[in-house]
Image 1 (cartoon, rainbow, N blue to C red):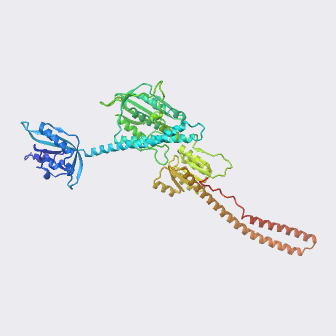
Image 2 (image 1 turned 30 degrees about the vertical axis):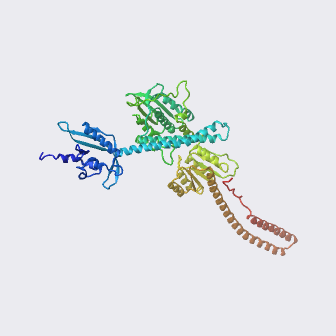
Image 3 (image 1 turned 90 degrees about the vertical axis):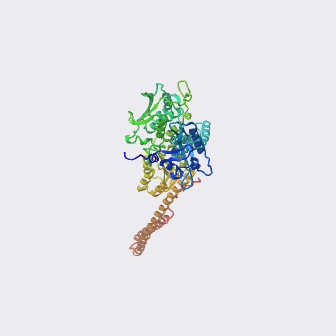
Length: 627
């Protein structure tokens, strides 16, 4: 190698952020990386005393970071040992004169000569400003979630608690009991959705932490599975649980329950009537426990098995989705599993659907504190409380989405002349609520999916169709297009009710031919008023059509009347002339009889034509929302 090595140039080009100080704390060398990190220039700082340069904020010349740095350097000068400082906050002056907050992780290292005397101090820093901002943001978001959790749970408790109390005091035959059950069920569903959103947010920003305890995983699985046994019977699903052997593990019991409940809920959600669901708990090599939940549902394609764990991802999403939800359940399962050092995967189930496999370590991380074990259920103990386990809202979703008998409810064929309304809404509770609200004024026919709704509309030729947007079979938009394309239904008014209240959805539906749009949640009085307006408009249009037909009939009748009367009068005149030429008295009498009969015909025609003015098919009965 030719020539001497320029060690100063080599030092200045080093990738780390280094500053060299003499024993008087004057800057004698600096790397390019340090000048970039501190937004300084080498010629402006070399030769100057360190705290002359970095007492940067004129409003706080002795910041906490500067004091900590002084103390660390004094320790190195005094003891000749390296000193690693905690993350420090500094106010750095930028070239434009403004002050910027930065966070550094500094280390001060002494450089000694052969006699052990201090020759210089190497001050190295790592800029951790970005990670500190993320951490600070996470803390503030965590506090926000804690506050939001309190603000959301409190009003929900004030809804659910009085509803439960009133329900306990209501007799089974009371007409208000069904409404109270609906309030309680909807409140439980809303609480579950709120819990899922808050849980997903906490996991996303990293503020969720396991509270480890020594628990029996098999027992927890049996408890969670027990909540779904009645549902399995109601839907004729063969539900088996293989978790007889006790398997102890150090896990967060609440996290484990949420994993189990989310996976069981998913399995039952996608398993059809008469299908199968299985829950198995077993041990695995490496001191691990494995939970398997399989079903006989439609399964998940191999290429989609990774994406289903993404937040808010739903493979059956869109306006014609058959299963509701927020798309958070599997992402929460994945995040909680990883929080415990485990993993969750999907495979083909022997039952024919999807198999969810959760593998968790049985031992908590070293140094983790174990909370006292809790006993929830078992032989001779009280059954587990669904409210305590947070499963009430999950089960309520199944009760709200399960039709009682068929996908359509029809009225009995009677002589009732009330207008017909077809209601298409896939949520059973809301379907029933709308039906009950409109049934006092209309004959209501209900469907739980768009395809059935179209068939009912074609069969009953209703005066109004009320439909949702997001429905299985046919979406609200597709149903609307089918109605407008059918010549027999093209003029039927359509009222769309939907939780999608954005401008684009509303404009798309109105352009497709919707007559009105009512965003959820809505007041039943407003629903009735809008329905009355649309039905009254249809009745008015029918009345105008009838009047036009009457007018046309009257015009035709009068034209015929004039033509016929002219011919009849002509015949009568001819008969009168013929009588004067009668050859005998008998012939004259016969002509008189014919003339009299002809006069009777003329009189009858005049009365019939005049009666057209008063003849009608009856006035339509208009509906008023005030009734």
